[in-house]
Amino acid sequence: MPENPYQNPLDTVKEKMSGFTVERRWAMICYLPFVNIVTCVITAVRKVDSQFCLFHARQGLALFILWLISIVFALLSPFISLMMWGAVLLLHISGFVIAFGGNMTKIPVIGNLAMKIPDVYLFTWLTKKTLDKVDQNPTNINK
Image (cartoon, rainbow, N blue to C red; front, top):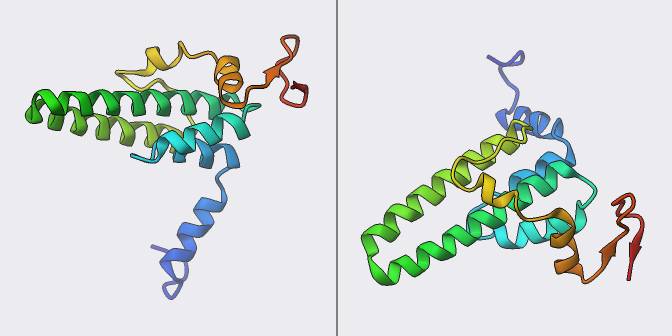
């Protein structure tokens, strides 16, 4: 029960959301279905200094690849594709909840595969720039 019964419930949601760090917000949007390819790419480029954001961006990209594979299965069997889409949706929800909690826990099915994507390779492939190998600091970007 809120302290003030006349308080707008949206105000309490705004207060809770304002407590989130920018990294948690970027990590959570990596799990939005169907747009996560765009948000994961933007996160990987903009938040290259945050291991938390890169962790969730890699998992979001792996979920997008799994979604594309389910589209291929749609050509073979609509029933299998429907089951895969349901599973992928559940994985999106679990990833969102993990990011919401501020944890760096691997998603059950694709977590290990996503961790095989190197952070530096992801940044280099997207921006065509390289990070210095010495300190991996994004302020030292070479063209």
